[in-house]
Image 1: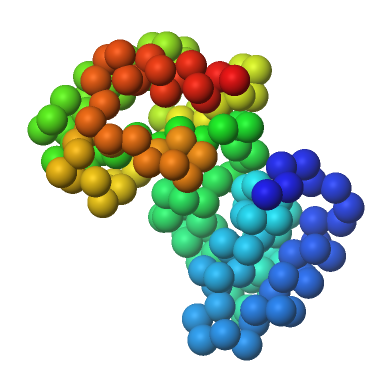
Image 2 (image 1 turned 30 degrees about the horizontal axis):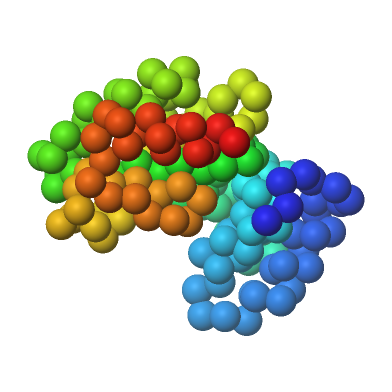
Length: 158
């Protein structure tokens, strides 16, 4: 994933749209590909997408803001996702989340000042039997407690 926007966002967005526009329901695949390219969905991409797909800017913006996986700003070097689903909450997920937020000094949807870690809520990682769970850079971690949360933060800070 390229986290630095270089070159013309509009040109790169148009190229992605050109490659995917013939798919049935191309908006989500296009948004995912744009996020893979830039590390987030730049605001400059929205009018290009709207124009090319014959949608309103509001429709495109609504999709970007509805789905939690789309970012409107670049993420940190590491992305820590905490499960917020009921199974994880019932097994102490709220306490783990508060511990991690305190250790990082940020809230959900924020990035540490040094750009190391972005904290994101997710609503099920499929590890309900190992609750509470988290995902750090695509690697899942289950049965978190305060000590495991501290280790996870330490790993993310490297």
